[in-house]
Image (cartoon, rainbow, N blue to C red; front, side, top):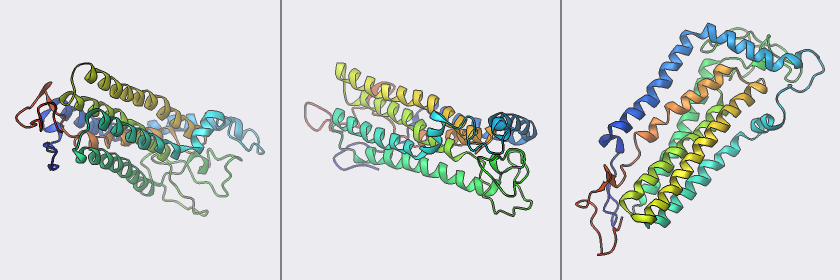
Length: 300
């Protein structure tokens, strides 16, 4: 794929980088193996799930008139109520990064911009689509829908029995409850909005090395790498926080949130295996392929 007046073709970086290939493979295989382990050890996980759910609801179950879960307050309650606010981050930062990339390079390779927009949207939509499909297939009751953990804060006329993860409930369901506990959509959605931005920021920063030099290159690369570091910090802060918030809301078991996070990591391979090769290869620009249009700069 070549953009007229661009002089640059699309090539996935993993085709020329063993390190990126290994990273992409690990991001897919490690979560997959952990999911298999979770399935095999589901009874052990069930004990942990029950213990945490009991702690999260113990004060609420002491009184039939308790209308609020003890830990679903303040910051955690705010996370539960504002999940979709996280979509502002990839949209806002993505637009900012591509804008800064254009300012820094004046690149006319429009497919570069289109790639990052399409890749990010595909990642978020596909991961969350699979999450919704798994909810329908796995049919695990939420804690607040179970006999063991329902409270006055989330009354259910006919609660159903607790089920371990990967064990669909197939018994009577008089209330027609939507059994959508597994995986945690809030945790997965938060992860898909935050995780890819660190990768996109880093790859855009690396791409500058073939177009800038000296102090200008150092300044812009530092800027993009800082955004990458920021995305990592926010991921480490908000993804676990969202998982805890879902436990506090009696909406998910711990294993549900872990599965949501693992799925978001697995689908990162979409970006890792499709990200375009930067203009530099082993730190050097291929001058035979990217020829200057005038005597002063590369028209990329």
